[in-house]
Every structure is written in structure tokens, then in C-alpha cells.
Length: 158
Image 1 (cartoon, rainbow, N blue to C red):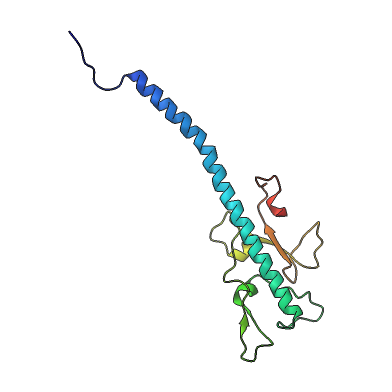
Image 2 (cartoon, one colour):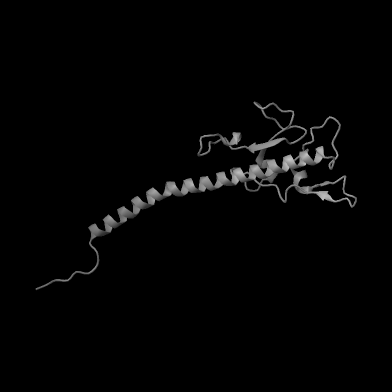
């Protein structure tokens, strides 16, 4: 007499579940690394965008298109000016010069409700390189995150 069995044995189910657990355990660090790599790419792009806007503002000041304070550096007084714009002194119709559509956020900043300009560490022109401090203008921005990137360089030094 031949006996037919239906379904899986307990051992087959346990082996299948343990294999699925191993695969999921191996995939988790890869997805976390991919998410970190995506945030780092966004940080790099945002820093590049803000720094290009700061340089464009400085160039416009040197060209006489923006009024420069006596003894000032020619850099914007804050990040909001880059998005709000300033009046072009050379334009007869009073056009405004805009340098950013919006101020990008630091993707590593923990509070999503914070204003974008407060997510960055700002360095003034008169500030020393080894101890950057905010001041009367914005010469550069860096991340406030204390961590290190995948390349081993701290985010604050990017």
C-alpha cells in the first residue's frame, strides 16, 4: 500500500525560515548603507549649491551690483538673503538678484521642523579656519553632524 503525504514537514519549514532569516539579516546592513550613501550625496549636493550661491553673491558685490557696507567682506549677512534676493543696483527697473530658490536643509539634521538656515553651521569671513564661528556675514557653511562619512572624513569638514 502506497501512502501519499501532503504539505511540508516541520524540518522543511524550519530550514526555509532559517534561510529567509539569514538573507534578511544580510540585506539589512546593505539597505542601511544605501540610505546613508543617499544622505551623503544629498549633503554634498546641498553644500555645493549653497557655496555656489555664496560665491555668486560675492561676485555680484565685487561687480557693484549689490551695495557693499564700508569695511564689509561682500558676503551675505545671512542665508535668507540668498533666497529672498537683493536689489540689483545696476538694473534700471529695480530687479532683484536671486541666488537660491530655497535654502537647502542639512539631511543629517535631526529636527525636520527646524528652519533650513538653522540646520547649518555658519562661518563668518573674519573667522579663523581652525575655529570657525558665525559672525556678521556668511562665508561658508558646514554640517552640524558630529559623525564621519563613509569616506572617513567628518561631516563637519566636508
